[in-house]
Amino acid sequence: MVKYKSLYNRVFDTVVIVLLVFLTLICLLPLLNVLALSLSDKNAAIAGKVTFIPVDFTLAAYNYLLDDTKFFTSFFVSFKRVILGGSINLVITLLMAYPLSLETDEFPSRNRYMWFVLFTMLFSAGIVPWYFVIKGTGLLDSIWALVIPSAVPIYNVILLMNFFRNQPKAIKESAKIDGVSSLQMLTNICIPLAKPAIATVTLFSIVGHWNNFFDGMLLINSPEKIPLQTYIQQLVVKVVDSTTLSSDQLIAQMSQRTFNAAKIVISTIPILVVYPFMQKYFVKGITLGSVKE
Image 1 (cartoon, rainbow, N blue to C red):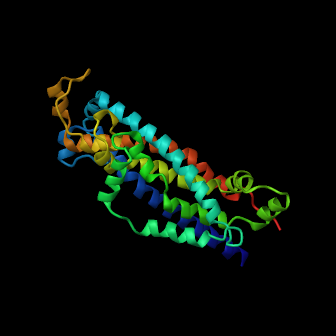
Image 2: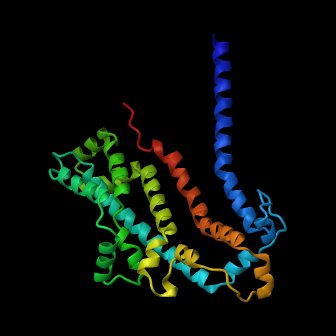
Image 3: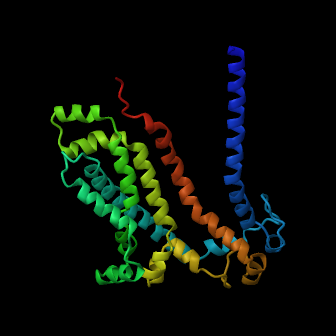
C-alpha cells in the first residue's frame, strides 16, 4: 500500500510539474516573440519569419525610441505618476479598508458606508461628467489630473477589507485588552499581518497607473506632461536624426511591426523590475502572524 501511494505521489508531482512548465511556456513564448520582433529586420518581420530568435539582428527600432528626448520626458512623467498615485492609493485603501472590516457593534454605520462604496463601484456617471468635474476643479494639464481621479480604488479597498476581516480575531482581542487604539491596531497589528494583500493591491495600483494611456489623452494638453503610455500610443514613425544611423537607413531597417514590438518591450521593463520585489511577500508573507491554538 505504501509502495503504491509513493508511486501515486511521484506521478502526481510529475503531472503538476509538466503542467506548470506548459503554462509557463504559454506565458513566456509570446514575450520572447515580441522581443525577437523588436530586434529583427523589417523584411523578416513583415515576411513572418521571426519566431523566438531575432532574424537579421538590428537595433534600429530601439535607436529610434531612445534617441528621442520626448520618450525620456514621458518616462519620467509616468514614473512620477506611479510614485504619487501608488502612494495615495495605498494610504486611502488602508484608511478605508480597516474601518469597513470592523463589526457593526464597533462601527455602527459600517453597512451604510459599505453600500455607498459598492454603489460607486457598480455605477458610473460616464466620461463626460467625469471630465467636467476634473476640469472644474482645475486639475487639467497637471500630474494631479492623472492621480486624484483614481485616488480611491474601490476594488482594492474591498480586497483588503476582506483580508482584514479574515485575520485572526484572537490577536485583535488580545490587543484590545492591552489597550491599543484603533490607529495602533491598524499600524501595529493589521498591516504587518496583511503584507501579502498590501503587496497585491500595491502591484495592482502600480500596473494600473503605468499602463493607463486613455486619461493622458483626455486630460493632458502639454507635450512635456504626457505619460509614457499615452506618448507611445500617439507615436508615429517619422524621420529623425540618429547618432548611429542616417534617417533613411533607420527607416529602411524598421517597420511599424518591429517598432511596436520595441515599444512593448520598453514599456514592460519597469513592471518586470518591480514585480520580483513584490513576489516575495506573496510567498513569504502569507504565514505572518499565524495563531497557534
